[in-house]
Length: 302
Ligand code: CP
Ligand code: NVA
Image (cartoon, rainbow, N blue to C red):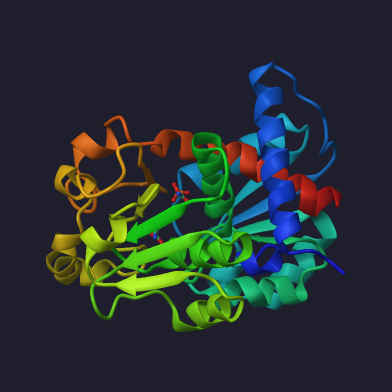
């Protein structure tokens, strides 16, 4: 059976840990200037329905580093933009390439691609999940904290990145406290999937409570791609959830602050925090490259 990464739940705990360890090894190799053609003659199709800096560049560099090739495909430049079906697109691309990575508005597009593709499909962000981001974040957490024996506080919108983190916390067994305004909690199906495994997830509307004794504080934009019309209302509602110096004063002294980027500085996070000593956001961004390589190796090479 073809192995896809549409959701963090597509991985077992062991598979996830293996990928993170592989990402660490690949990071070390790259630092030492070692490049091996692990994916020689392999091509990755990268479909983008939404903009991207990190996902696009890190996947493309990952393929180049490993001796393969990546093709950037803007949704509207494909026949998809003129109504060719997702199923037919998946069937056709499967005849050419070794893997498909897609960033889409609707998560259903990812599952439809996976359903009709004969090659692995990787979710490069949907409205429901962002699994590749979380693999890089877990690599970063282990790098900075030494293990997954941590408490993670999510502050802000219970969005796609938060959903994938919840599923990771269920797999790896770390505690998660999530502070969101009422009505902006994470997806209910994701929460119930996680809770069935006995995951320790606590929901609150008080950011100070969430960050108390946290080892990791994670925030993301208040308005995700596709929600632009709600921006003004969201900016007003989310104001008390800003990650700033005051909020950090409630956390451990050695807390790390994470953000998947792009950040809206002065909204969900202040300049002094994102540029300050607790921030690991650029290590996260770098680890996207190493994590993506590990994902590609695991899925395209088995
Ligand atoms: N974090 C992330 O996925 O960034 P891009 O939107 O730039 O790909
Ligand atoms: N939650 C954000 C993540 C961007 C990488 C969004 O969906 O726009």
